[in-house]
Image (cartoon, rainbow, N blue to C red; front, side):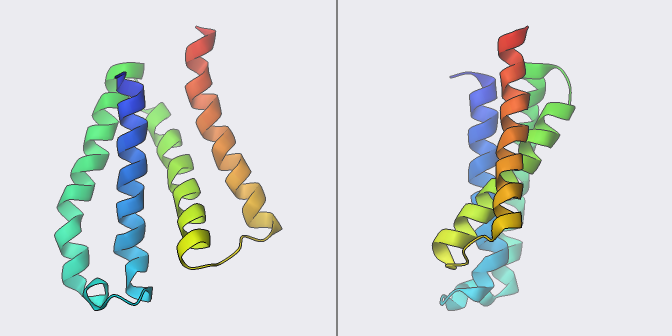
Length: 115
């Protein structure tokens, strides 16, 4: 498995965890309303982002790529999970933002094909 793929996969999973950590308080699970839920998941999620950054740096040799991929991934995960779990349909401006986030990820990854 390539380091780029691992970096993106870890970043996606970590962003799902962050969504549950932050928006979980609005779900019907009592344990997600506790600050202990946030504290308990802070170290594993922070470690996951650290690992994603490491793999990305080992792949690209610079930090900009993971910053932009991470931003795009966070926006996509937030939008999709908020739509699917909280049933908040994105309006036109949010849909355009999601498309732009996908574009950011695509530009960062496609640069590998033009070397």
